[in-house]
Amino acid sequence: MTNGQHLLITGASSGIGRVAAQRLERAGHRLTLICRSQERAREALDWVAPQTTVLLADLADLASVDQLCSTIQSRAEPLDGLVLNAGLQYAGCKQPRWTPQGFELTVAVNHLAHQLLLMRLLPMLLQSTSPRLVITASEVHNPASGGGRVGRPASLGDLSGLNSTTPAPMLDGNSRFDADKAYKDSKLCNMLMGLHTANLHPELPVISWSPGLVIPRASGGFFRESRRANPLGQALFGFVARDLLRITESVDNAGERLVQLVLEHGDCGFRYWSNTLVKPGLHRFEQTEPSAEASDSLKAARLWTLSQERIESVLNS
Ligand SMILES: NC(=O)c1ccc[n+]([C@@H]2O[C@H](COP(=O)([O-])OP(=O)(O)OC[C@H]3O[C@@H](n4cnc5c(N)ncnc54)[C@H](OP(=O)(O)O)[C@@H]3O)[C@@H](O)[C@H]2O)c1
Image: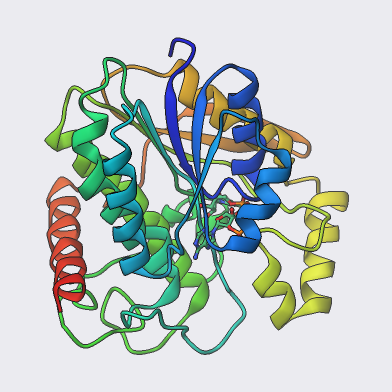
């Protein structure tokens, strides 16, 4: 990707996305960052470069995402890259959390908000001479991976949880809520959304990727909700994974991987890159096969259609 491209990034107010945004700014790109609140936007304005735009949207609220898309379209600034990186999980919590439109929170933020961004902004992206779509998924989408083997595996079943106007806690329609599986399922959705977009637009480079297990020492970040639910257990997990077993990746390295994907990988079609643990303290970043379910183009198309129907029905009601 040549210098001076315009990239829109979700989830750049913290963690992997923040590291990547700062490096992409330094590399001379114009960024639009999406922050969930005034407070997060003010914090971001303390560290972003002067040429960076910060816009507000709570990805848990589809109306807010829809408004954001209208704002971006009205600015009419050409768009060269979409980096869909925001994500959350609240594994360890027993009860589902619901969004203003009645969706389970994990799937709403990690998947539905990003699909709405794609539905509205893809036409702008496709006008770029060197467009790029990068989606932060996770190896846990794959039940055969190290992380994907722990707990209930990712699986969307027949997607009956989306095929109904009554909100379901799980996408497979199962009524038993499991926050960890909801996260894995949402990351499987990220993979399928990338695959479907590439199937529809073979001229577009689409990369989904997995950063590895990233557990920062700071109190915020990706494990904040799980820490609240189980402070002692999570502190122990972080210490063992990061300091004893050395199976984690640093935020800096993960952010650098994301930069690499945005800047270097311009081949058309869908690809999955994984930052895989090879041995304690060593990761290998390589193009990898997605899981069987994540490679299912029919399921990818069905997920897109059902998600679009749900999104449009709540926005039009
Ligand atoms: N950390 C890991 O071990 C790991 C492993 C595999 C995949 N991933 C994926 O990597 C991506 C980045 O995670 P991270 O580790 O950098 O975590 P993080 O530090 O918690 O960053 C998550 C980002 O998503 C944003 N976000 C969450 N909910 C939002 C909402 N409702 N509206 C707008 N923005 C929202 C956060 O905003 P705030 O700053 O306002 O909270 C933050 O900028 C995620 O997609 C995650 O699923 C992480």
